[in-house]
Amino acid sequence: MNPHTAAPSWKIDLKMAGVLALAAALATAGLFPYLLQLMPEKLAPIPLPLPALVAAQSLQAFVLLGALSLLGLRMGHRLGLGAPLLRRWCGGDSGGVQRPAPLQAILLGGVSGVVVLLCTQWIDPWLPAMLNPPPPIPAGQSALNGLLASFYGGIAEELQLRLFLMTLMLWVATRLRRRVPGNAGFHVAIVLAAVLFGVGHLPAAAQLWGLDAIVVLRTLTLNALVGIVCGWLYWRRGLEMAMLAHFSADIVLHVLAPLLGAGAP
Image 1 (cartoon, rainbow, N blue to C red):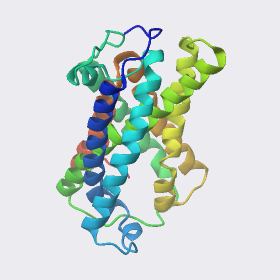
Image 2 (image 1 turned 45 degrees about the vertical axis):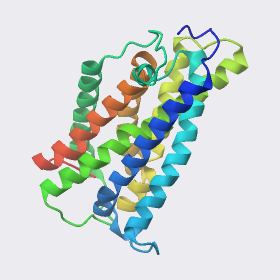
Image 3 (image 1 turned 120 degrees about the vertical axis):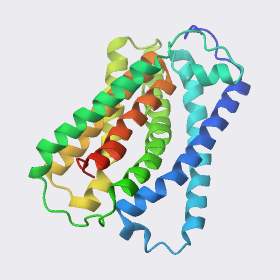
């Protein structure tokens, strides 16, 4: 689809948003074993049985991320952004603006995960002592929990940070300037969304270490590195490729690293 043509009807976008909302709800449910491993003290005081809490959070994700997905899809038409494979699967025309490249996405995601892992080996000796260290857990169980959590990163976080937030920034810029931003505008949006992706991980870092300069720098920089890769892929290859890259990076960090004994929270 040419980004300057009229946006398609709502029917396909609603169908796509429903699929993405369901995927986000399932990914949210899958996140809980990892949360229980990483910060059990945060979940313990919640006065709900765990199944009810999981159901409530999954329903919330379905509604909220479904709405954000619909907004992102609608805004993305004018910008040439979207989910071409899902659009085709839902009966629409991907239009060829973005050309999916799954092997490239897996490679870039995996390499970014390895780079992050190598950086943690250099940075982590400078971190303060953990305030709330996670309880010891067998490597196999940690890897399984990490696998389940990787779906949340690849699906839910990409819906929030790329499909909605990055698209929103570019849509606002388009409205203000009355034309679609050039490459520089997309680069700025990619970096800003990546930095905000890092900001979103600060509460978890604060729970583990507290917040000092090295913790903040570690959290922002390492998460932004993966976010920039995913943002570029969203722009050039489509949302599905950003999801695939994010998932691949998380597999390295949360599945392979525990199995190799090289992981860090």
